[in-house]
Image (cartoon, rainbow, N blue to C red):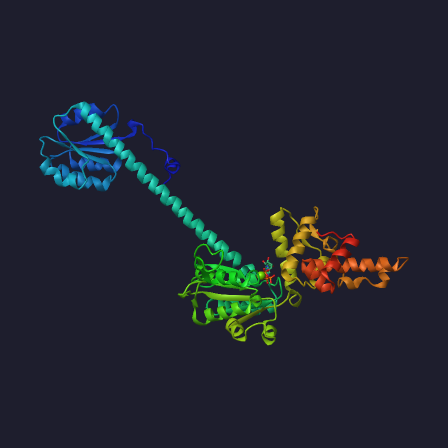
Length: 491
Ligand SMILES: Nc1ncnc2c1ncn2[C@@H]1O[C@H](COP(=O)(O)OP(=O)(O)OP(=O)(O)O)[C@@H](O)[C@H]1O
Ligand SMILES: [Mg+2]
C-alpha cells in the first residue's frame, strides 16, 4: 500500500467528484436522465450493453455500478456477476422496471447487489441512495487500506524480529568469540561438535576466560536457539531459594511463597539452562540436581507431583572440580553427570597470541561506545599487553582497554605510558629493584613505594579488596589501613 493516507489511518479522499459511477442500460433516455441526476456530483460513465460496461470497468476506477435488469445480450444479473471480477469493491445496484424482487432474490441474498431502484424513480431518492452506497464503499475501501497497512506493519515487525533474533544470535554466536590461538581452536572444535547435541557440558576456566560467552554460543548455534537460554548463578542464593529458582514452588511451600512459581527448568523448556559457579552448590542441592539429570523430572517445592522438562544443561566453574570431588566437597556422581563433555578454557596467559586480536577488538568496542577514533596500539604497548600475566583474563584486558580509551586525549594510538601502571612495568611488584632506588632515598620510602605498587596491582588484577588482601597474604583490615596510610583511595 503506497497511499500515505492509508498508513496514517486518515480517511481516503472524500471529494464526491472523484467517484466514478457506471450506468448500464439499453435505453438512452434512461442513461441520459440518470446522468442528469448524478452527473454534477460524480464522474458518470454510461454503457448500452453489459459488454460495453465491462470494457469501461477495465479502464476506469469505478466505485458504483447501476445496471438495468434487462439488457440485450447478457442479463443485468449476469453482467453484475462478471463485474465482481473486474471491480470487486464497487457497489452494485440494479434498476428494475417492475418490482420483481423475487427474480432478484438470489443475487441479493448472495450479497451481490447492494439495493435495487424501481422505475420510475425520484431523482432525490436516487441521489440519497447513491450517497449512502458510496459511504459504504468508502468504509469498505478504508477498511481494506487499513488492513493492508496493518499487514504491512506486521510484515515489517516480523522482519524486525527476525533481524533482532539474528542480532542476538550473532552477538552470542561463535563469531563473537575472538581468538586465533591453537588452544582456542580446540575449544571451537568441541563447541561445534556439542552444539548440535543435547549433551551436558561442563565449562571449566579461570574467572574472565569467557565461560559465559561459550555457554551462550553453544545455545545460540544449536537447534535449541529458538527456545530460551536461562542462566543461574548457583553461588548467589541460599539452598531453598536456589531450589525454588531452579525447580519452582507451590504457594505456601515456605514463608514468603505467596504464589505458585515456575522454576527455570520449566522456563527453559526445550532450551538451555546455564548453571554458573556450580561448584558452590550445597550437598542437598547437589542431590536434587543429580535426580533431575538422571530422570529428567522436576518437582516444585511443596508439590507432590513431578513434571518433565526438556532442558539442556551447561554448567560452569572456575574451581578445580575434580579436586573438590577428591576432597569430598562435590558429589562424584554429579561431577560425572555434568562433565559428559568438558570444555577447558585456557587462561589468557597460556594463549598470548590472542591478546593483540582481543586488544583491537575491545578497542573497536570502546571507540564505538565513547565516540573515539583511536587507531591502534604502538608496538611497545602491544608488547606490554602480551607480556602481562592477566590473572583476571579476558575480562581484565577488556577493562584495561576501556579504561585506557576513557582516559585518552586525542592520541591516535595507545602507547605504553597510557596503560595502567602495573601493566606498564615489567613483572609488577618485582621491578622495584634496589637500583631503581639508587640515590639518597630512605629505606621506608622505598618500602612504601613497593607496598603501593603491590597493592595497586593486586587490586587491579582481582578487582576487590577482599581478594587483593587474600593475594597479598594480609587481613583485609590491614590492607585498608595500609591503603589509608599510603593515601591510596578506594577508586
Ligand atoms: N574470546 C573472547 N572474545 C571476546 N570477548 C571475550 C572473550 N572471552 C571473554 N570475553 C569477554 O570477557 C568478559 C568476561 O567473559 P565471561 O563473562 O564469559 O567470563 P567468565 O569465564 O564467565 O567469567 P567468571 O568466571 O568471572 O564468570 C566478557 O565481557 C566477555 O564478553
Ligand atoms: Mg561467568
